[in-house]
Image (tube, rainbow over all chains, first blue to last red; front, side, top):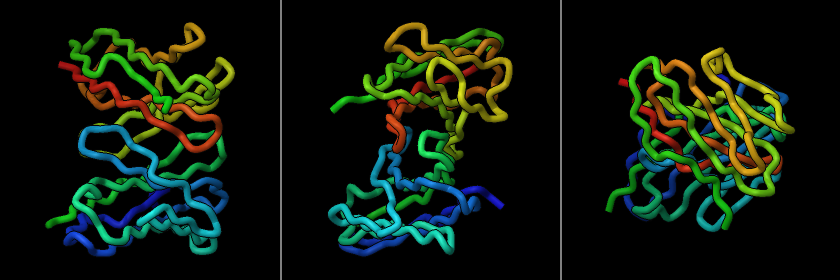
Length: 110
Length: 111
């Protein structure tokens, strides 16, 4: 089983749509969870940390379910500029390495 | 906003040659990392560095790789004898603890 597994995608959605990505992780002791955005041939850019209580940043909402070992990212009112690959990252310790999923590619179309 | 910087942006080398990839982490960060991403594949951890020593390394980080913090600002990754399969994007990252912030990467092409 992969340490971090994401929806394979790709997701092709029209502008204005709501889209959700899921990610599961294998280590129940994992401590920190993140969503990154990666544009083609660029570096991962931190989108948001994911907290147990769930958190929201504008159109983006992240949820963590420790019991089921998954995290999710919801994007509301998709924009063309949201087109990118979304990476789930998990850390077993706060200062330790990040383990990334394969990424889920989103294309938002006019 | 402070950023991680990396040089060069692109490095082309012949198989068997040594390369040094350079990174300047965010100034108040204490934890430094190298990751690589082969084209079309996921981001993979190579090594983490704290308090002037390696804190963790992956199976990929074998004897051909080394890291160094030669002064108060730079963090380098040396690949001693490059192989074709070392061709990838190499990302440096730094953090205070969590989360990690990534540099723009160095694209390494081994011919």
